[in-house]
Length: 98
Image 1 (tube, rainbow, N blue to C red):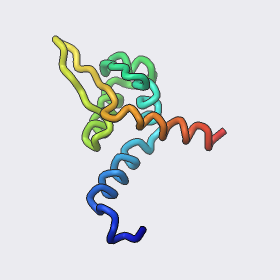
Image 2: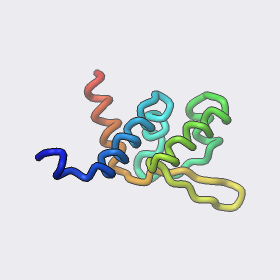
Image 3: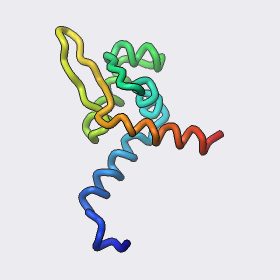
């Protein structure tokens, strides 16, 4: 396969998603959302044990790059993985770093 056979836009999107994931807190967020879980900013910030504003910043990056989606229900906004198979990347990294 050569570069002309590849979809450059698709490769760019994939690279941007990987860049968005490439942070310890954002990798942890993906882990928390495995298995179709939907969590609020408050729930995620409590799990991460970091400031809520910092958690919101990380969620914004992941959402902006197409890693997460969000859904508003009443007063809460729930975040969840756009593609459940993204957790396979986290699993692979965990195995490679053992």
